[in-house]
Amino acid sequence: MSTVKPIYEFKQGSAPLLISVPHAGQQLPPGYAEHLTGDAGSLPDTDWFVDELYAFAIELGASLLTANYSRYVVDLNRPPDDRRLYQNSAASGLVPLNTFDGMRIYLNEAPNGYQRQNRLTSYWMPYHRRLRQELTRQKRAFGYALLLDAHSIAPEIPALFDGRLPDFNLGSNDGRSADPRLIDCAWQALDGEADYSAVRDGRFKGGYITRHYGQPEHGMHALQLELSQATYLQSRSDPVIDDDRRGHLLNALQRFTEVLIGWQPGDG
Image (cartoon, rainbow, N blue to C red):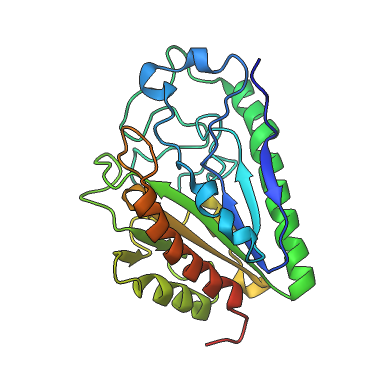
């Protein structure tokens, strides 16, 4: 009998940094898998192993919040009213109906209104409740809070974007989700990694989590980092970690995380 996991895993740290990992989960509710198509059954749009990549951050004092359930159940990085965040029609909604490659997720009927609301209540709300509680705690303790929403994606998905994605994709909602000085520090840390390509507010500017919780005028700063999976996986079709790539990437991620933890309001 398979073990039913909790909605999320949470480890509280001692620094004013919360790392949110909303899309690495692979758990499905009981009976859910039988409704998925063959294309969706392997959960190809998972942010593979991102929670494992950031495990080191706990030792640095960061808090870590990781969703256990697949984004195909409900997308935690979409607004609860399912308002569209991206102009691209292929972008997924609150309850995705198609994979990133445009293939159907469900064999038969899509979830109805009751089922969608149940997923919102049962999975989306608990994750965001914990996320909000931790940011509020950090702000009370330190005077400010910093959120890093951590993601990864295949380097090439023609339905979502043209060409090949840079290695590091920093999102700040076009400079609105964090103090400009923090954004500059974060960008310099990524852009300074000679072995990786980087872009700032390119295809990925930050999803709902970054846009909603990033309120620098209230001491809440949020950034999104979308990693190209080419930086640590052998291939998209067979999501297996490449140990050499991962080791090299972890060095860069640790330097980046240390910059975030070391930053304070008023720093240049």
